[in-house]
Image (cartoon, rainbow, N blue to C red; front, side, top):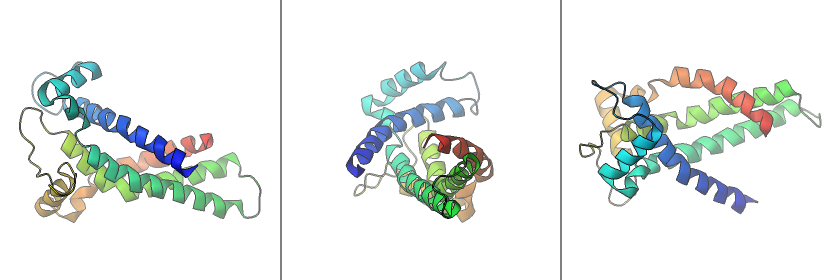
Length: 183
């Protein structure tokens, strides 16, 4: 079973990296002056591939992995631990207790992975026209992750990697509580 779950998650990561890149590019295009760079996801994908080649669509993939692996591990562990705590002898949890466990799991997952998500978004938001301002480690395939994290902390302090955490965690509880009903 674990091998199957690992395979499914590997396939998910292969798809989520490019989806995250396109989502980030579409979101940040409105922060820059001038007209939007993309008119939708298909045009965004075409521009990325045109400017960076077919592997450019995987920009930020290492950061996505650094975010997802610990984030999902903590999320599932927190969900199971909270469910176990709430069961207290009952064979099945009520809907509300299941939703509560999902909400707690969502918050725990984001607490663990939010700094990596911020770094991932910064890497993916870089312009396609200019070279990356983040140095890639030649020994670890990090895509500039550790340099971006280091630059953030050096320039803005250690709390800079938590910028925007409040809204993220505010939506984590209701979002994950509803998702937990499907588990």
